[in-house]
Length: 316
Image 1 (cartoon, rainbow, N blue to C red):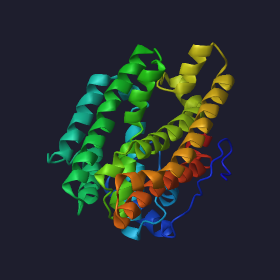
Image 2: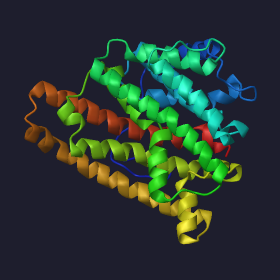
Image 3: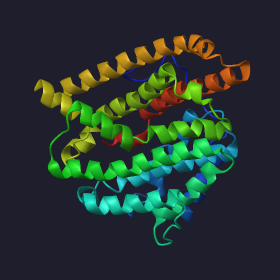
């Protein structure tokens, strides 16, 4: 059972033994790609425990792979945070930035003067090495979805109107980058999930829940920071408007919803063996599908454990 402060679940969290080595390599990567803002030094950044998130999310990764995972986690946070200020209220400029990064996916050279572009070009090149074309195509689509969603998020800040629940889910599933994070389960493990299993309704539901639960939990923890800045893509704000209630009550509603989703996720996991049999997967294919499903729940458990302890949200 989880020891998270607010959510209970049956998925155990594990930690990679290679975290210390990955931390040193991640620091060197940040120095090569200076993504840290002028008001966020290495000491403050260390309190976010980004490498710890990678170690909990991908506990079976070898040292090289865990270093890649840590660099990816750092990129997500630092790239997203650049839009917390005035830039995040200029959607046309955000769109140009993200279009350039999307172009890198398709072979465009990064601008040497842009740490974001050089960092992402490095991450993408390391990620696709040795992976089959089907995986590369899916990963490229998911990264494009992530980048393109930031312009819509910026537009939402300008409108100062919270989206409805459906609109929130569409945009949040893009900006959360969870599909790219789940693609790395295969990349870091050096395997490829059979297409029939990857797209089976049961596994797709588990993947969606594993993506949405962290978003709901994160909305609760980040609400104190986001509400004063005009960030409207937060489910707590939407619930406040729907129910005309206090922020405290809305946080409780969102947390309860995430808890129900965790129960649904656990129920679906028990249906996977029958799904594999129905698909006629051979033993090797079943093993790959199991590794992927376990990767989803391991990431979920690791994230919730990390989120309850990281200094990234404590200051809010």
